[in-house]
Length: 211
Image 1 (cartoon, rainbow, N blue to C red):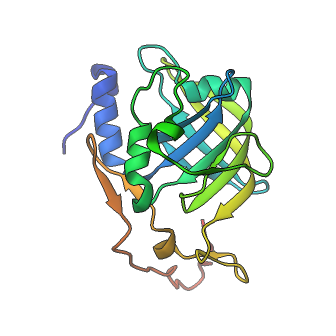
Image 2 (cartoon, rainbow, N blue to C red; image 1 turned 90 degrees about the vertical axis):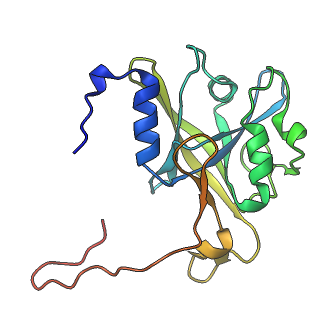
């Protein structure tokens, strides 16, 4: 086996190993509003669900050169944001939002996203995205030496493109959602076009509970 001691690696080497191994990762395209009322949009691939009651999600902000991104500053000023799931139809616009625009420039306008007002929070929704989660900030947890900022939000409203959700069963059709995810290396993404099923094993005396 190849083994690595993180204490002997710099931050770039640590990131390359971790981000190339923990794959695929969903993409959170996050909208916020700054002090100047200019809306901001930025993608994050360190993103996932936290739990329910209430529904919660998280994404991680990694400061660059010691400076937190506009998203983090905006959420500290206005503790609300909208997380969007990215599909292939909006991937190019999402990619534009990943550029390091000057402070005060709206990535939303530059990328040409169409927006709609949110129901319970101030930041706008990007209506071309297949799913949109309005969130209120629960906490920002600072971990590590940089530190990294883990943003935890309560989902207060969920929006889906027509036809994605079976509203009688609250079943989301992953094929119709069609999200893309991040893979290893710069610019590498994946689709969920190859899926398979494995049911819980039927082992005598062992309950097949989910976990």
